[in-house]
Length: 579
Image 1 (cartoon, rainbow, N blue to C red):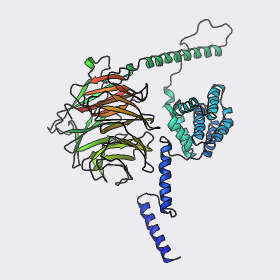
Image 2 (image 1 turned 120 degrees about the vertical axis):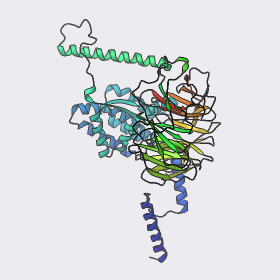
Image 3 (image 1 turned 180 degrees about the horizontal axis):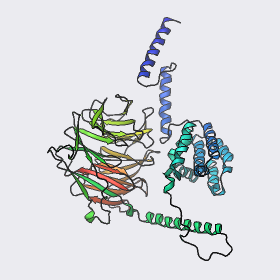
Image 4 (image 1 turned 30 degrees about the vertical axis):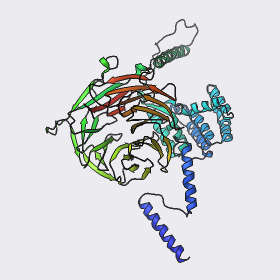
């Protein structure tokens, strides 16, 4: 070995040790500059192809193998009740395994998969299986649309809590990541405790004129089937009525007004359990209030006079109060104005950002600052937390967005591409992507794995101040100083709707849990509810009553915070007077 080879080896070992100490992957092998350029190009191109995919193994051969293992697991379940529950997952998983074959371009593999496993299902599924088989052989636009509908459709399955935990434990232990990702993305599982299910009363809706000679078992079966049929009919009537009257499903709004907020309210956040409210102020403090969410919600829209929302006042006073009786708790540590605050899902930690270019993590139990994160060189305007809690992202005036882990005080990745200040950041529901909105009037979608821009969204005529992903992750909405709300299809990157109704900047928007409505508010002192369904590729003005479901006016309070919470409840907050 020559001295130069030995020297290069020592350098490589030193670099690998450094990377390992910072939790980065070590280098393996050597690559030329051309190799690195080719790898970066391929990563960039590959990242655009499928924005909504999870980071799962991309080998089509594993799909059939993992599905077979899943079927074997179901067949070998010793508990018959558990087996019957999990069996309801087989067909939805079967459909999306087939769609994954088509997604990989392996049509022959998909056909073989259909032939091998379609015999395991009843005649009730024959139509769907035949439709999928025909669509795989066709280039018809209608068939492609049908396949897209299958991909977007979410199956609804009921499982007891014990069965659900048993299923997840098996999938994780067997390393069936493809099956696990399908269940996570495409199947809505409603878990319940077994003893909370009400049995159908055999005397309910008793059918008349039962033919003589039926056995007791036949009678009970007829009664039960009649009861179930009546319940299904009643349910369908309710669904049809709901579709015909979308405005009947406006949210219940609980609004908090900050009075005497002369310290300068910059940001508001409410915990997911709606028990704690945090306000960030220009005097470099964050203040916490305990909320009595047990009180009745705001009046329904039928009871609200003059379209006004019932407001709950939070008065900020300077007078010192005894600790036990104090109205709010003040947190001090930042040296600049508080610009954003967010609770984690359990509401036991609070993140705050500031113009001092730092992020601070607070323990809510002892009200102490646990750690300070530094990396930005200019004020931080916004922060969002991943649903996995360990990761968070920040947007800054230094034109960058940074990805952090709570375990490290330095950023894990830097996303650079905007040509002006980055005002807001949001995690995609699958947490593989983040969206950013900027003063440069654009939004960008970034791949967290490689830091590349996979979508560039244009159209707004003003600064982007707020964003929101639809619950299914298919759409991105953004709003800002131009008073309009823009809605993009993430899969194509195209602008599909523009809601132009506000006459002042919009500071907050939120999708309803079902994804059919958007709530928006800002300096206009009102909350508007928009219907997302309807024609696409259109601009809707305020006068379009079919799209603007309702407008709720406050007395003189600007809307600084909007967030849908449990069921169809909307929590809002803002300072009395102008911001």
